[in-house]
Image (cartoon, rainbow, N blue to C red; front, side):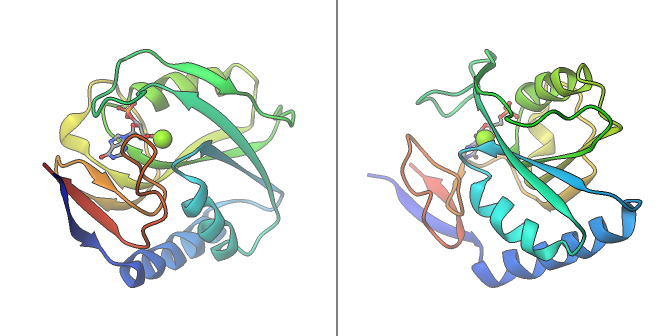
Length: 172
Ligand code: IMP
Ligand code: MG
């Protein structure tokens, strides 16, 4: 049996996202910001962050698989759904739920750079910096968290728990 220990409440998450939205609005020059949501975990964060941003945005989705049912990264990254829109010359903001080893986003950033956007930055709700294996330049971080496995607010364990409103530690 595993149990859930609340780590970040809905209120704290929402307050932080409003701050991130305001920071993003201030940072970018005029023009449309392309929000690239990494499925599936980041979909709740994308929905809230996009509404915290007041400038013009485009929204698109990318599917990346690197975990399967395991709790640790397999190190293999695969694109399961590519973007629908062309991104040449665009300001791209990758919206991710959590950065752990960095394998996924290290790969994805390189892939998107090859499409000649004007800029590529990363916004992640959660960051576990202790676990980094690959270098990732993260511009916007919601919360730095310790090395524990978390679920909720989009994050899953074997597809479960995504609909929790808080982020919780999944304890064995
Ligand atoms: P990375 O490639 O190791 O940085 O892994 C990033 C991906 O692993 C995230 O997008 C999540 O899907 C998944 N992941 C990493 N840590 C956790 C966690 O604590 N809970 C749920 N998913 C996680
Ligand atoms: Mg993910």
